[in-house]
Figure 1 (cartoon, rainbow, N blue to C red):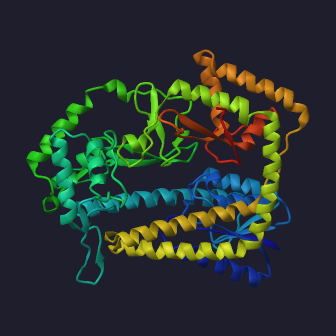
Figure 2 (figure 1 turned 135 degrees about the vertical axis):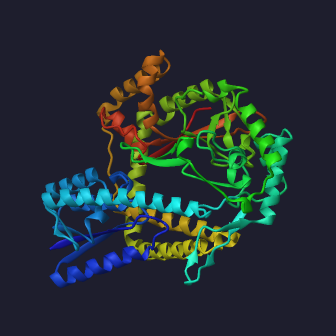
Figure 3 (figure 1 turned 45 degrees about the horizontal axis):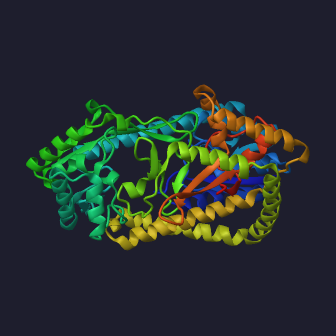
Length: 537
């Protein structure tokens, strides 16, 4: 029986060896039954409640299973396959259609009845676990301990109890960082804004909370979510818990942070952790509230045609609306250390992007060139990737184990050392890069653009451009189509004292779908193949 093995674990804070254990016991069962193992698929640190599209290993496994030549999928339990009832049903439907059975070590072959019952129990277990975690966190806060995170100005003070077990969540003031906290509060109370404070801290070479540069948003925070240093009540000697809740969007499966009403907050006095005296705290709170009502019109910025797509070509940060009509690098404006001070009006940017798409990237002859280049590069990449797959998988496993060790070190207080934080960041980047390499091995779709549709394609581009420059209703309707064609817009300073250069990175698969008149254009956030084009001068 030709078998695919699938394994998954949920979080960076869990042991990555869990996947190795799952694979090992699945191999043992397959060997005992005489099943032929065709391939193994994994998802590292991804929740079972994540959408199917957000789990590359599961996607690759389903693609292989439905391609034919596979008899069954083997996993440790149904909870490894999915912890969402809708996903569990959809996965079983796809496997059933391909005449592939789902078999788990815990429950044997999963039929419709068993799948429905296990899907409900797996989803409910995830909700019960979340409830128990919340309850445990409340107990930790009631004892004056932090349930998670380490605020700037403090360090871990974990110790052992009489039974030799670690008491976690204990904090103490870091004298060096406390000086910086008082400086920030004092300068703000004296009239400086958050951006000016961040610029001075960066100029003085003072590392930010994450070890990098200071940003105004770190200091000022978000009023709705009640975060940021200036309103962190821990500096006043109060530990606040349950300010926000995580809510999963049922459509995109993205986790959203939602502010809870203050009546649901849990506040515990911790006077030994107070850094800012009451007079300074009240002075900062008074100014913070008074500034909030100065220019409310600036907080009601409407959504733009290109919102979220524009990035700075110098620092990689977002390009956002910084005045009523102009866009600029948010990091440069936020004191994040970027040197790109060039701005461009919103209308001018939109006009240049639409013109660049119409005249350059969406030209049918150029798209044909993109397709030919894509075929060549895809074939070369596929050959090289298949040759190196075993080495990439081995390096990915090593990187995952390294992340595990460093996470354990951080949990034991190692986050106080910049070297450990830097090593953890690099290890995670290596792991994610290798995981992306493995995903790219799986499949390389072939795309084509038939010459007979070039005239129709040019007409569609002209119609789209006219619609986007027309009345507001038609523009709103056409905007998702335009956005679906763009992966990223990069803005960087032009040569000379003024102006910017713009580079458009497009989604090749969506461009070709529109060219072929297909209605299946993905207007979501899934990243497809890309093609670059520089706007005309």
